[in-house]
Image (cartoon, rainbow, N blue to C red; front, side, top):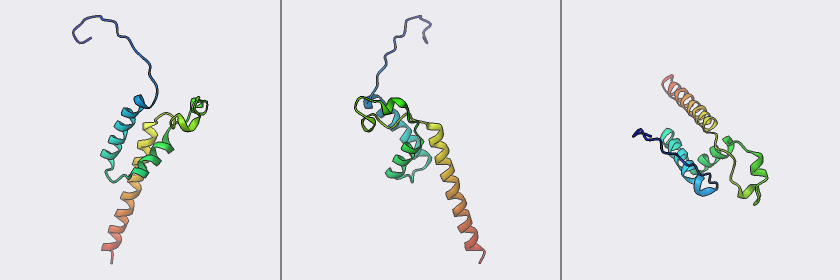
Length: 102
């Protein structure tokens, strides 16, 4: 503790969308800060394509469609964002060079 006390810290484990929503929302905010041109569909696609699916998702009591879409993999997500940004940059540079090569 910052004040030097030795109070015990108790942890609580919770699951569900109420706990996931703030984390996913924060991640989306970081994504939009990195690339403000992202659309809702692109954000959804990136989240779904980079998440790690687990056996727990398949075996959820309500079925896989009711158990979320796996575990966030922020490293894979930002690698995908960076890769796309590099592709766009190269395309724009190529178009710029072609425009002035005439």
